[in-house]
Image (cartoon, rainbow over the protein chains, first blue to last red):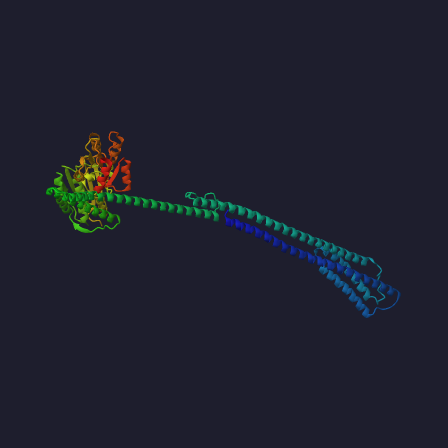
Length: 502
Length: 124
């Protein structure tokens, strides 16, 4: 159950108990009030009954005296006395009626009995007074039965009223006791419930928070895969655990990303150091010849004997050649660096690829002759190119000079054809029958500063950057380059270029 | 060791080899040459040179492997080897020394310093 639902439930329970207390109080007040009214009526009725009894008694005494007087004397009853007697009887009658108004269902029967008997008695009394002066009318007023009857009824009513008053008082006491008990029970029940709910709530949240804390600590101490799974709560604490787990995922990913970035940076750094070491090595090789020959010629100039001019010239040529090699190397390194930093751009112009290839053949012709290699061309119908002509020229100059460099008295074949599937693309191949490469050498042939064999640069020269540049140029021109080779049999380089990179 | 002292120069690049031979000769040192590591080992056994100047990037058997094998062969392990290489990093120097080389010189060669090392190791 969620924290909010638990809290709501506790609050509702406490409110219900509170409502029970308040309700009990009002009900008790109402019940007490009602009983109190009934009680008060009963008490008043009892008093009234006593009063009526007294009046009846007085009136009877007076009538008995008058009856005796009437028999013994001839005194007449005066009008004023008659009127007073009538008023007295009327007063009794009205008191009895008032008593009737105070009576209720329980005493109704007693009252009716009283009313009937008293009405008859009072009528008789009234008749006595009115016929007092008429001696013809004989009235026996000594018979006590009628009066006793009324008196008895009045006493019955009185007793009944007293009984009811006692009963009401009893009900009031019981009501007070009951409301007191309910109030106390509800009070202690609410305290108990509040305490119990509070205890469970505290222990539940405590456990959950401990788990959350444990999770945070575990994660914080580096256990990036730790997730809080032991909280069953579907409410706020569950949400908190979910949020924590989400945060953990994101943090872990972020940390992995940072690690990856750091590894990549380390790798890039390593590659840079490697590149620098390679550059240093490649620069030192021609510099070794330049400095070595220069120092040697300098020393020889100081010698006494005749200078061998032919030898001197040849040595200077070596220096010049090494200097040019150094320049090429620096140009290549700059090219490669430009490509790597994204500063190398395409300068597109319209050209005929076959014409540029023929130019490259002319430039390389002397070198081909030096190595006794034969050049074969198989150039088909080619589309006009709108691409970077300078890079195109450099790619094929590099590939051809490589093929020539590693081939002695062999055949170099250059072919070009439109791709059958898409005539906008042209496939160029440079095939040689030279020393070839092993599969291990082939796999690294396009990497910078890697010549197939570390000793080949010494034998064949070159910077080890040519093919790396070729690969980058091909990519830049929208195409690709690949190589196949077999050690001792020869190599084939295949270049596929679009006539227009756009 | 024979009375006459001479150097074995192991270098596969023809230009560099000729230059070194000429410069060493001008300094009054006798030089024989080898073009790869295997040839160098053969000549060390056959000719017993006073000292070897060994390039590290060599075909067939490179300079590091050749030096290691020379130091494992008791017939020639006494011959000092100076590594000559265009690899100028400290790591490469350590590689060469770990392979058993007695000295280390980077290309371009500081020739007077190289002569001093040769004299210290072999001609003293």
